[in-house]
Length: 88
Image (cartoon, rainbow, N blue to C red; front, side, top):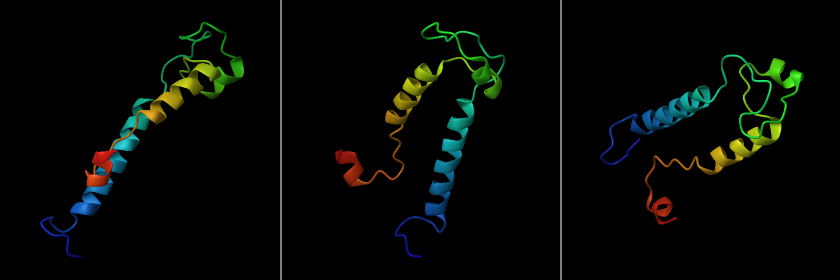
């Protein structure tokens, strides 16, 4: 496949790097250690079922949902550097 100045396989390498970065980010956000009995953010009690289901849980459901939404809105990584995406 002709890709101009890029070497053969460069596109696949870029895709592989993007996937590896996403996996590493997801793994780094996994909780570890002992679960807390009360939320770090709001101080509400974390239900026993949640503490047993998720090892190392530190937030209640509502605070975790808010954090997940914030992370989703901040994850605008662009490796392609296309002109269209730079204009946004």
